[in-house]
Image (cartoon, rainbow, N blue to C red):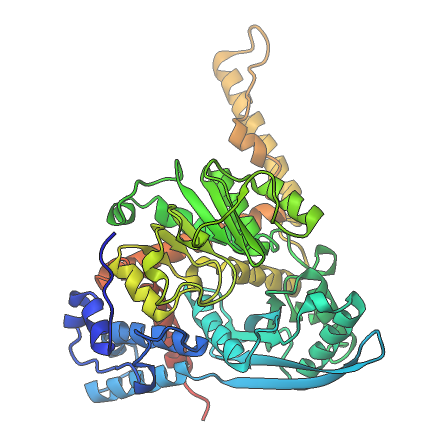
Length: 543
């Protein structure tokens, strides 16, 4: 492996960023703030500082372009100084977190004891409404984490062209320590507190599932909103996404983030130029991968990669890791976990006993658990060629620089785990339309396809006659699968696939334009910043 270099200052960042990108800075003067100057060496930075640092790093690259673009905006006659001031001002607005709500409320436990529950909801940006972001139940929930995740959601939505602002919520509990009845009381009370402060609503703020929550909790939130403050809102159930199908959910939402990780990887893994940069071949054939975290995202990522032809050689969980260089079957592992409550002891693999499964040789590493798992102290030990950030913020800035120097491709979180928010957008639209995708066109498309086949058959018979009987026209296997028209699931999968493909091409284009090499994170942030900037510039500021 390439020797690892260490960096002691922001000057090191300027050296790391491709020289062509920095030399092309003509009048841009954006700098990393002093409070973030230790990010390149910090072993355990605050999560929000990490997001801010990545934001400022991209601003340094894209600022010149923003200033230049203002020159050609129709109806704007600004001097160079005025354009520079406007760009600087909007970038400052973009960085700030708009609102943070901290909530504390009591619940009566099933044993009669009383307990105070603390929760947060952060709305990072209202440049687009509603805001969008999940609700997580975890003992690691803090004000800083929620604030950082909301900022990441802002850039994530912009990266994949989902017209939402960024938000996030968290309740500081371990859901495994509460009964279903207690969890329902906590969830409904939290939803009511959000509603009282106008932090939830179809056009204001739309939560979704996250760590420790799922369809059940989203159903409780939707019902609570619809039965209280939203009782006269016909779009009330659009106040939250990730609901069960019966409650206005959408087919494909549960597996959406994992499927998005697969599509995100596929777009880069089939790109010969990028694969040659990291010293491997295009395509899934012969690729091995390790997944950290066997929750919803990890499971579905493992499933889709397995179907594509890659081999899972290891799975890391909080209570143990398993390893099998011959491959682990995701379906068998899921059934074992459901039956036993853990992956430990799975007969299809052995318990891992080395230094860390995270550091084993593989083609693809998928961190799908918590933030900051790859940091300054362990980045040099990573042997994977590609890191797909299925979790939010798994790589610290110090680790990010080390990985780039070592020629390891990091596909950033704000792009590759955006499948969840993309399909949430589709669910929100479905709720506003009050009709499922495909319902109005399903039969029409099916009949049209059969008429098409009949038309072809009749044309052939007119040309060649019917001697010996009718000429059979048989649809191909691929057409046979789609002859009955697109179901809601087909439409969702197609929309997600298209979204991830288009966003990947945009990231590659930006990386090439600014000569960023393997620094895909800066390219993704630059794209997001440009889109958000355009929104602020064209909409203007309210007073």
